[in-house]
Length: 340
Image 1: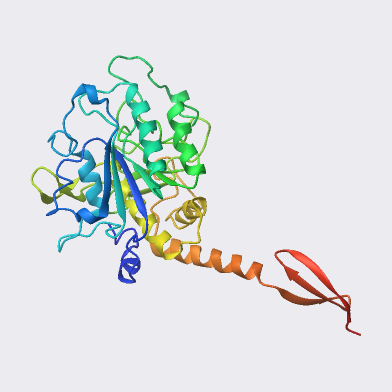
Image 2: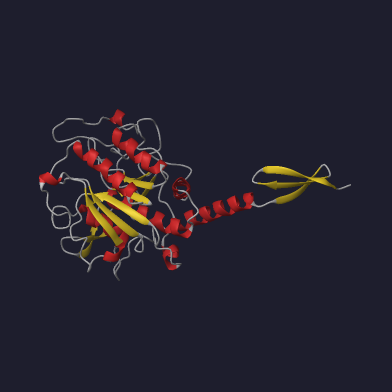
């Protein structure tokens, strides 16, 4: 996965996500507390947003709750077999999803999970969850709901506008009746991530854009077909399918770029990732702007910061025989000095 995303040069240069904290919002994290699988010093904390009265069990111990751990492995796991996209980042694990059923209250759990990530100072939030219909039919979304204005999507956008980079899975309904992305993948100011195979072709299951109000969705895509993961049950390296795995790959990649260029804002980082993508400035409704390239994004980011620094330096020019100093876009005429 790192090769496809152009991460190898960054990793070889020591940019592996150090100094960045990624909040992983998902369902359970079966065996994520196993130090034989994950460096526990990189896992800062774990938080369960499910109603404690429901007695759903320990988020690390329920075998049915393995999805979050598999998601985590795409970023944190490191062995001779494969290295995640950000093995040196730190992680906050947050369970908001009840795998046993789908109900509208889980969207409120997710909002509380976002607030927890914000409270704990996460730099990046990755969400491999999405909603459109619920088991009891109460509060079902429609295609028109995908305009970024649902309570959940607005909460996600709110995190982005507070300076977090938020990555959300496009969903796996592309070849099913729903077909589209899900909520909160329609949120504004985030990176919605679709899935492609190792040839760069869109996965049939990857959710389609655009948003209901016409914005490009997904923004980018990443490997999500036969993606290398750790199977939390067997504790062995395996493969999995889904935008759920494509999304954290991009989140981990972003952490590496941000480590290399810490002067970037979250929105600038988002823009550099989009502009580095394989189809940019073109796009389609299943891959967005294409597969981002970490090395290209780093080059774009470095150039942006260098330009910004140049603009803050004072420059001396001559205008109509007067000596003028330009700094931060403001022009100062040097009094009493004139070239004849």
